[in-house]
Length: 113
Length: 110
Image (tube, rainbow over all chains, first blue to last red; front, side, top):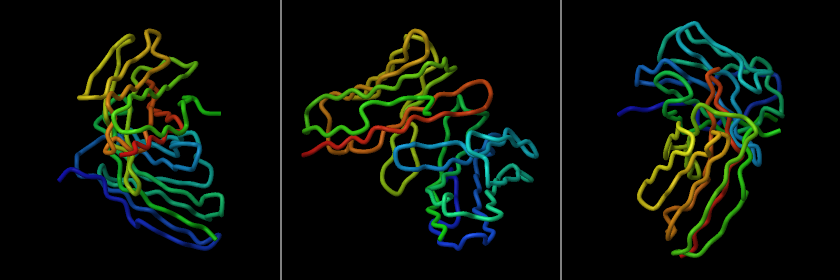
């Protein structure tokens, strides 16, 4: 089954404790991206990757890192999480960029206390 | 500041009524997509429009892309409780960035 898999689905952590949210897709898509969703703000793009080893900042990249060492995986790293990073995070992939259909994971609800 | 403005923010209607959701921007987009998101799930694509003036129909849903490719609308005819959800528009550009509107929460009462 074609899918985007995020882990974990739920995470509560403390300020400053490094964490990684994993994202994996099995559709051989070139483009992957991370979004955060906050009430009243919709989805905002954090980082995106056009292909292996090619990443770039979205609209809200501060406090986040990503890597794309393999085509299928695109982890999101929070080196020193802060409470303002409490949010619902989505990973998405598409064949070749934003003009093709984006397939979303089920989301990771992160709480930083 | 939201690049794409959606209106209304909330919409509650009775089953069988019609509704329209709007998505407006001052920017031109190479494509515009509409997604529906249900609680606890990621957004799922409904349609992509790429040509100014384009109209696409998906059963009871009609999507229109403005002539100038800056705005779009989603019209649902004879809404059903299964249409309940968060509707999101998203604009794509050639710079690999995808911008979303804040969404319209639609509730259809039986």
